[in-house]
Image (cartoon, rainbow, N blue to C red; front, side, top):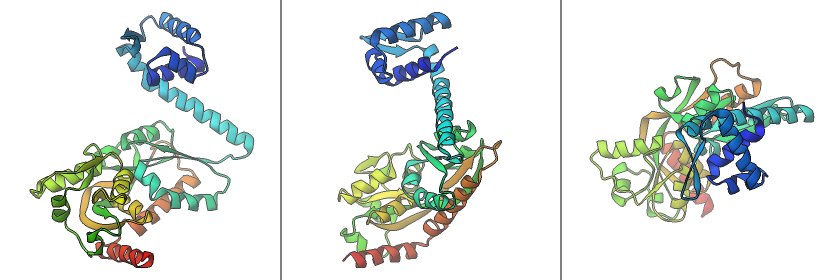
Length: 316
C-alpha cells in the first residue's frame, strides 16, 4: 500500500512534526508533501495526523503504523546495502547491534580479529538499548547483538552469557582515592557519586545495592551512558560508579578504576536469531567477544588495582 517515498515521508513526519521540516529532510517541497499525506489518508480511510498549535501530531491510528514503517525502511535499506556490497565484490557482511558502552569497550578489539580473518567483510554497527537490540535480532536486522540484561530479557532469542558484571568506582589518576588499593561502596556513596540513571540496568543495580545496605542514594550527577559518567569523572566532577564495561572503557581513557561490588544481575550477553544460522564472521566475533570478556571482565579486584597502579606509575 505504501511506496518507499511515502514511507520516507512518514518517518520524517514522525521525527520532525512539521510538514516543512519533514519535506526538506526527504528532498520534497512542502506542497508536494502535504498533497502526498492527504493522498495517503484518503487511501487508508483514516487520519494520520491532527493539527494542534500549528504543528502536526500523529493520531493514535497513525502512531500504530510507525513501528512497521521503521521496520519496513530498515529492511529496504538493508537490501540496498547488500546490493551495493555485491556490486563492489564484498559478498560477506556482518551486522552487529550493541549497547553503547559495549560498542566503546569490548567490540573494537573483537571486530579487529574478525577483519583480520575476513578482510572483505562489510560491517555495520547499530546502537540501541537491550530491548531494541533483541528486536533487531528477532527481525534479522543484525547477525549478533551485545546487550546488558537479565535472563528475562533474552528469552525471545538465542543467547550466550559472556560474563557477570560488577560495580566499579572511576576517577582521575590524581584523585586522592587513586592511590588506594581498594575502595568500598560505603566510601563512594558517602561522597556523593556520579551514577548511571536508574533506567539503565547498571543504574538500577547501583541504586538497589545502596538501598539494600542502608546507604544514602544522593548522586551529584546521573548520566545516561557509562562513557558519559566516565567523561564527567575525567573532568574532576566526582567519582563515578559504573559497570565493568564502563571501568574497562575508563582505563582505556587513562582513568583509574577500583572494584566495588560483584553483581549477579545484570550480565553481559550476546544474542542472535533462533531461526537463522550464524555466519562465520558472526561466529568469530562471538568468540572474540568471549575472549575480550575473559580478559577484561573476569579480572580479580586486586589484578585490576595493580593494572591501574602500573598505568599510573608509567604516566608519572
